[in-house]
Image (cartoon, rainbow, N blue to C red; front, side, top):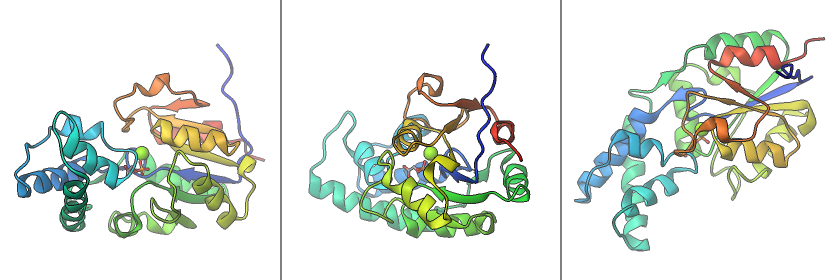
Amino acid sequence: MSARPRFAARAVLFDLDGTLLDTITDLADAANLTLAELGRPLRSQDEIHSFVGKGIPNLVRRCMTEGTQASDAEIDVAIGVFRRHYAVVNGARTRIYPGITDTLDAMRALGLKLAVVTNKAEAFSLPLLERMGIAHHFDTVISGDTLDVKKPDPAVVRLACERLGVATADALMIGDSANDALAAQAAGMPVLLVTYGYSEGVPVDTIECDGLLSIATEALQYIATA
Ligand SMILES: O=C(O)COP(=O)(O)O
Ligand SMILES: [Mg+2]
């Protein structure tokens, strides 16, 4: 068995949905309120789970089109309806994953800069981080609409590093899906994936990465301390 690598990281970039916060119940509630309002068949939480990862427009499009059909105009209407419902339920049933608060505290104590890089739009990511009481841990937040590209495009992780004042090679990404892994790798950054999150129906252990975490505190074992 190969030894666990250690990274001399100065900053850690966290994914949001499925990594820091278990948001699936609120996302599923907003999706099903949307489908009900539009007279469309409802979706199981498992199905919606596999649609999360590439932002809200993609989630809504998949809810409207998988196994059925909808026009672009109908999808646009549905995105607006979803945003209205999600603004109300965002955070209501969301939970912080086990180990997250301890991990963030420990990383700050090590002097690491911390960022969130999420595909969730800023109108939802910032209030959610506040509502869950973890916003103060992060030096910056890059959301799904901060740039006109999202993960897996590496531009978002590069922007996070620029805002933190660290080179991409000196940062570590922690996520739950191939979107996180691909963005980090394209920016030349190591990436750890949690095994408890959402990975678009793909087994997380089939995604190339530098380590798998069953709980976030395990990330500390990958960080080289001076
Ligand atoms: O909004 C999504 O689809 C996923 O968001 P995430 O990038 O925080 O996992
Ligand atoms: Mg995620």
